[in-house]
Image (cartoon, rainbow over all chains, first blue to last red):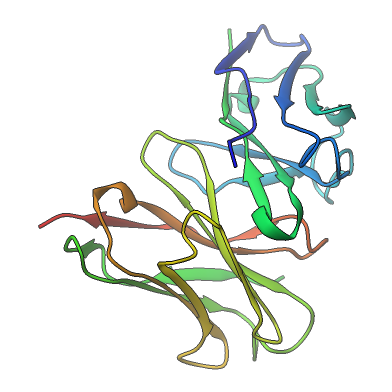
Length: 111
Length: 120
């Protein structure tokens, strides 16, 4: 099972909005509404920011929004802030043989 | 809120077995309905799901690692363990234990991670 495909890097200025794509297949992203997104700052454990496609855990800013179309999931960060500079990973459930597949990761830079 | 912490040797020789323990801030990992999970991340690279154990003790593994991985309860009631046999340099990574609090299909509670280096 190959990793989900994400852009290596995305950048934006403070206040702007950016979108990170996460492309899988009909066996994972396209078949389940079970994509989650994780934010990881250097040297830290990943932090959940979106689960089940578009749900935000308690305490996560509403500037983060998740969506899906076909085999591609997306994470949009509205009103980009300096603290959003981090690595972002998507993850999809992929059925009872493969179970979970992560994305390749995207480095977000705030200009 | 449940907290998790990994522990174990930071250095393992090639061909030997990597063993890690995750301690959970709960009386017993057998209570409730949780999937107790291991995930790893080589330096500068992405995340890889290793496998999980349900509260009942049933397990699921990444097919690419299945022949070498065992996740099991213990040593104590509030711990679960990872064993990875026949390690090579490519198994060098930060290993995280995690679980899903809001959903079975998410990892929203993580340990801090522990670096394991495979080297002679």
